[in-house]
Amino acid sequence: MLAKIKSGRDSLRKSEQKVADVILADPDGSVQSSIQSIASRAQVSEPTVIRFCRALDCVGFQEFKLKLAQDLASRGTFFYQDVSVDDTAKELSTKIIDGAIASLMHVKNQMNHATLDQVIDLYLACDRVEFYGSGGSGVVAEDAQLKFFRLGKTAIAYSDPHIQHAAASLLNERSLVFAISASGRNADLLHTVSIAKDHRASIVAITATGSPLAAAADITLTVDVVEDSDIFSPIKSRLAQIAVLDILAVGAAVKGGDEILERLARASQAIDFKFVKDR
Amino acid sequence: MLAKIKSGRDSLRKSEQKVADVILADPDGSVQSSIQSIASRAQVSEPTVIRFCRALDCVGFQEFKLKLAQDLASRGTFFYQDVSVDDTAKELSTKIIDGAIASLMHVKNQMNHATLDQVIDLYLACDRVEFYGSGGSGVVAEDAQLKFFRLGKTAIAYSDPHIQHAAASLLNERSLVFAISASGRNADLLHTVSIAKDHRASIVAITATGSPLAAAADITLTVDVVEDSDIFSPIKSRLAQIAVLDILAVGAAVKGGDEILERLARASQAIDFKFVKDR
DNA sequence: TTATTGAGGTAATAATACTACATAAAATAC
DNA sequence: GTATTTTATGTAGTATTATTACCTCAATAA
Image 1: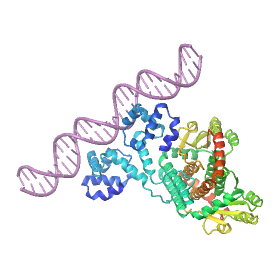
Image 2: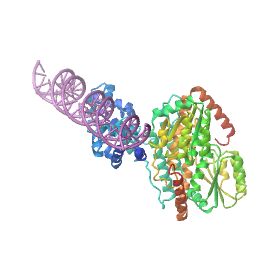
Image 3: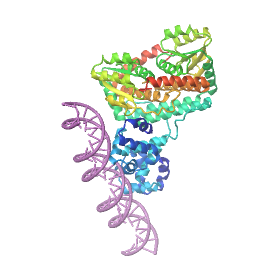
């Protein structure tokens, strides 16, 4: 629709072009405007606006506005854009969510599916799984614990470096560790991983390509996110990590066969029972 | 919007539910209908339709139709799709991430910016802020704590119902509480909120439209997500809640002026110092 | 200059959305 | 169980908005 207006603009009559210009200048505002506000902004009469709509194959102004609105909603252009101090609440939320979406699309595109399968197999073969992360990644680790413990196997998250440390020394060759860090340069976590390796646990890193943590791990699920624009709060890496772990958990449930699906059903029932109120 | 109608349907009045049913039965047709055709199809009066729209946070029928249209349009690009047992790793990750993206786009479209501003003002005016959530929402609460404590004001998250309970009784009229729950039917949380209200704290709910929690709160930031497809793990509400809180935190930082920006700079430096390794 | 055509405005009309009020139903108190 | 209050929903009227019919003015051509 927007494209149609742009391309058709020159073949319109003079005052209809004024209407086109007003709409192209602020499409988002236009969908909320009435015909008279558009007419006055374009300095033309209301019938002219209607004639403009008819020229674009719409039966009336209503239909035009509807089509325009749908056009605006579906144009999937999401890109990172820095927030600035004089953004309105609306601009802010658009920027942040577009950035988050762009980051998820990036994860989707760079995802290595073979690695994904390997990790799922590792999980299905192990006895227990532990998630280590600090700060923001600690939240991700806890979220992962919630996802995985429902699959029936022991799943624990630690966000305190000292406890991670201690926990790692209790692992064995049938343990699986997920080490989560956006930068992959958390010294404490690297140390914990080396201890876990000493005890022959398998290590899966969820981190940036080429980082020390990626090098230390047996398998790495890369989650690279440009955080330049994240001065205020690092949402992008957070969401990306959560998404990756979600894919793993769902993949494990699906691939694990009836046994896991059954456990899952039982866990869900229990949850539903406790949270008739809130799941 | 569609999700909002679905999730909010049961908390609507009887005749408004008829309207909801008519619209859910034929959303595409509804966006082209006038208020009276919908009223007659639902066998209710026109004002009832308007009241229905208002119940969904729209200022009138026009806005409702517009939002619905945008919702329907954006449904096309990324859409919720249930995972199935014989999906490959690739299909799985596509489905999950597309679902997550759809959910974020949904948040973006349904976001009420005036409310957003109100909540930011509340935060800027308060002395301390606490985040309450259990289970999955507990993770969100902790993530929020990490975001907000960097702004310089006391910020604490509790995910244990009993501790929330105790904490709420220590609040005062200069306290701000964020109550987080996907369904808004967590009985423990509702109780905690009532205690917090007794102590005159301000309550902001991050929950579903028309839920008990939304009713109990002073202000509600609605996050409606269809979780039907989330048998395996509820990632969508998680991401949506995190995104909303991120927007709030960034909004507060931006709107709080130099004072907050300075505090943030100091906090970031400290974080960078500790996490040269990992932020 | 004077018809002829079409662009574009004015004013009236139709339609649509919305408001204020009244009544009926339900919930609560006595 | 009745009275009182509250809540839900419809009726009727009003305001807004879109649309139509018609008229004027300007441009072109005979």
